[in-house]
Image 1 (cartoon, one colour):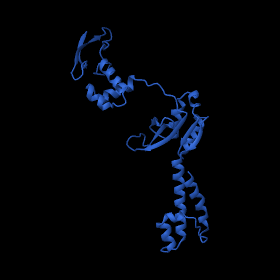
Image 2: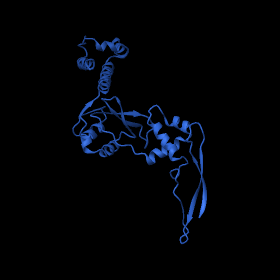
Image 3: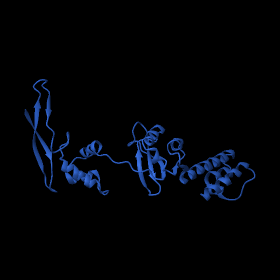
Image 4: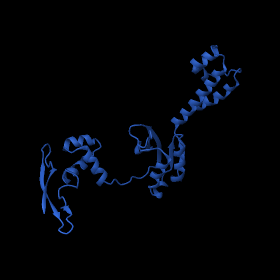
Length: 249
């Protein structure tokens, strides 16, 4: 039998450094000569922070005003060790899916993985808070995420708001069978505005370059919002229903 000294961080009192010096017994098998250490009574394997210290960190994490960096400074424990503990030993129970679920994305090339520049954001539309953030908005990843949710839970969802990304609609139809799918007003207005602007550009390209009509269509967009339909350009008739539709949203 041999001993190996270990140092365990254990500040039992606030603002006071506390250290446990512990000699771990190492046992050697006489037959195969393999070695094994006795179970550490003060900390998890691979951690130099005591059970008490990690328990104190978990209590602070229950306060939403605390960040990992703040807890690290207050308890003298590294953020890396805190994250390792959370990933290895803490199991967060699944929350119930909201009845009105919003699906959107955030463009962030630094936080996403697998060269995907979009993170998928799930929102509780009723409570107005983020439900979850996924590493990708790809159809495969969304399908994998919702397939892990019990069917009874998925059937509770009544409404889903999305943008015009087709995989959102496909996944909703497959995994949220009772939900009514709606496109959120922001993306509807954005789509109509883009189409309306493209129609204006098409009309402008029909005009002679340098003419008054070309200048007005290029610089004075608000003229298209007037009720004067120019008979010379029959395509303009298509613009007015679009305009009325935008204003009615």
